[in-house]
Amino acid sequence: MSEEKTLYRLSSTETYHRQDLESLGWELTVSNALHPAGSPIRKILKNDASYGDLLYGFLSTHIPFADITKVLEIGGGYGYLMKDFLKVNRNIRPFMLDIAPALLKKQAETLAGHDVEYYLNDATKMGTAFFEGFDLVIFNENLGDFPTLTDVDPAILHTHRTQETDDMIALVRHFFDLYGLEKPALHFNLNIGAMRMLEKVCGAGVPYIFVGEHSCEWTMPPEIRPYFDASGTGNPRRIRLKGHDEYTIRFSYLEAIAGRQGYRVRRGPFADFIRPDINDYVKAVLRSRGLYSDSEEIICQFVGDLYEYEYLVLARQ
Ligand SMILES: C[S@@+](CC[C@H](N)C(=O)[O-])C[C@H]1O[C@@H](n2cnc3c(N)ncnc32)[C@H](O)[C@@H]1O
Image 1 (tube, rainbow, N blue to C red):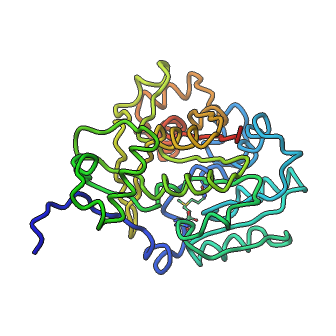
Image 2 (cartoon, rainbow, N blue to C red):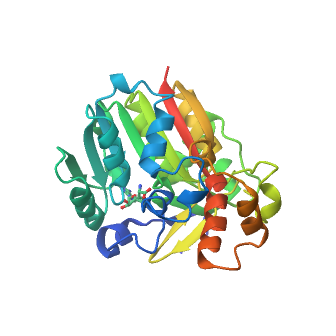
């Protein structure tokens, strides 16, 4: 038996997505939560609209959609986002790549009547060449599913011991050395799949990239902060879900990778484009922590999510 200490563990959701996932029903994404027109959370928004409509409106102030044709969405879930984009912009040629057969099927149902190319595959296994030629690549609430190294010993960043024999250790060192990432002093979790994915898509020269996910570095504005107890710790947090674990994302690492690859980066909370109206009613709901009804509990959760979820809009310079 090796005397070497384990320097990391690998958390993967691949088997779950390929074999076990039947629906996202229990996993309420922001996009799905905003899908039903009459949902209580839409009523607390300054602009009552679906996720795709709000995102498209926001992106069109940062991305020249007149120059965009080929749009690849990775991990499109139920396909609602792309459906909204196609409703607004008929010039888009949609491509959907997903690891889960059940969700790709659902996307085909949602996007029926549109000319869509579907790819059933693990995005992390696609070569750089696959991503060349797309004008915009969208990652919405999926990078947290990608492979994550957990309980990483900071010694991994300093030891040369197993560098030649362990590709994963070499990959970790590559990211920290090449992109000058801040090195954690204590054991940490690392979104290695998300980092490798972004590096690959940037390396393919895709002009515009959108990333949206649950962050581990979120902050809240002063008017919201008193209503919430937790805060972003900077270390990707494990979220236990049915059949798999997700990890929140250390956005500053993704930002550093994109910046070094020549991208202009805009970063912020989802609340930049899903703007809540923090009126007296919403303040009262937040103050009560949503204890008095299911819909108020959902409102509390949702307002928190609008700040805990961050986005990156990347534009190649
Ligand atoms: C949490 S769901 C989000 C769905 C949708 N984007 C939304 O916001 O509602 C994650 C999506 O990413 C897909 N996914 C997870 N890992 C993937 C991988 N390695 N390659 C491609 N798709 C993946 C899942 O099948 C699913 O469609």
